[in-house]
Length: 195
Image 1 (cartoon, rainbow, N blue to C red):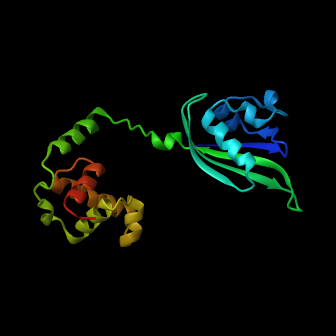
Image 2: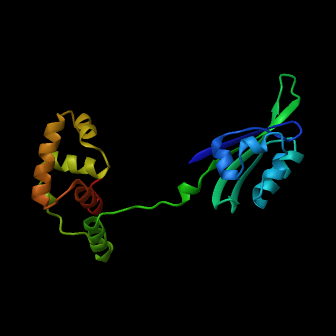
Image 3: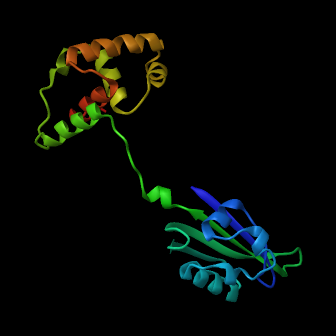
């Protein structure tokens, strides 16, 4: 997520813009300095937002979808900059580019993808057999903590044992339940309500 900031003087002319603002809005500070910000904004959505903010005296907030110079989702804030006497000496356009928050791409190994597909094929609500009855109370407790997403160090702190002891218990849990990895242990715990 990047944060852009453009500052203008009281007349609305650009005095400063950070790199993120320049890249997102499609102008260079060297060319834009001293020019009205409204004339530099090529995307109609942000141009309209800035126009509304320039006419009003209060803070203007908005969620904007830009299409130029590239598609972006912004959370924007336009406000007046005041001197010590409360007089307007300029305006600030501050925005966060939240485009990446909306587009999440996960890359999985082929093995992980196959396991997920296998899980998806199982009947919902039909848990696998529950051989966890053969676990010791301490192993079951550790499996529950793994199911809650805790790491070995956190589990060790929680149950007041050494981290190596946690690893040892987990090896026994994996062996008894036929699990190959921590992710399988988490899945098992979730499927059996052990978190």
